[in-house]
Length: 232
Ligand code: AMP
Image (cartoon, rainbow, N blue to C red):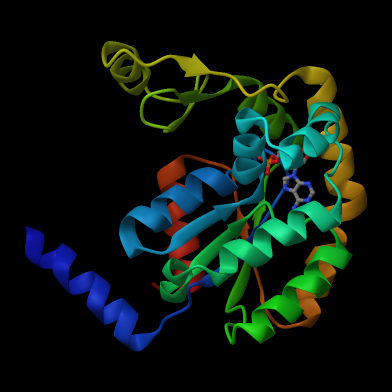
C-alpha cells in the first residue's frame, strides 16, 4: 500500500514533470480546493495571495490594514502589496520542489511582473491551468463555501458530504465563512475577474502555457481532468 505512495514522489521529482503552475479561474472555480489536492499528492507548495492577505489582516500588520478595505469591497489589493508578498514567498527554499500560484496573477501588470521574478529565480512556469465554471455554479460554490476552523479544509454546505461537515464539528471545529463571501461582494469579485483577470487567458494562451479544463462536476472529476492536463 505504502509502496505506491513512496514511488510516486521521487519519480515525479527526478523526471521534473510539470509542476510550476498558475491556477486561473473566477472566484469559486475551485482553485484552492484543487491546489490542496496537488499539494497532498505531489508535495508542491500552494501560494495563495488571498490566504496570505487574510493572514496579514488577521495579524493586524500594517500591510493587512492597507489591504483590508479593498478585500472587503471585493476589489483588487494594490499590485505593489501583492507583488512584494509574492517576491518574498518565491525566495523561500520550499518552492524549489514546485509551486502552485492560486489567485495570482490577477491582472496583466502582475503577470508581467511575475515573469521577471521567475526569471530572477530561474524557475519559469510550466503551465497555466484555467478552471472554467458557469456563473450559477460559481454563485452556489461561493455562498456555500466554509472553512473548517480546526483543519483548514475547504467545505461547502451545499455540496460537501454530510459526513465531512459532521467530522469538522465532531472535532470541535467551526465552519467559518469568509468575510467576502456575501452576495454583494461576490458580484463585485466576479466583475473584477471579468474585467481584469480574464485578459490573462489570452496572454497565457499566446505564451503557449494555457491548459483549459472544465471545472464543473465533483472535486474528484475535476482533479482527474487536472492531472490529465498536467500529464501526472
Ligand atoms: P481570493 O482568496 O483569491 O479570492 O482573494 C481574496 C481577496 O484578496 C480578493 O478579492 C482581493 O481583494 C485580494 N487578492 C487576492 N489575490 C490578489 C491579487 N493577486 N491581486 C490583488 N488582490 C488580490
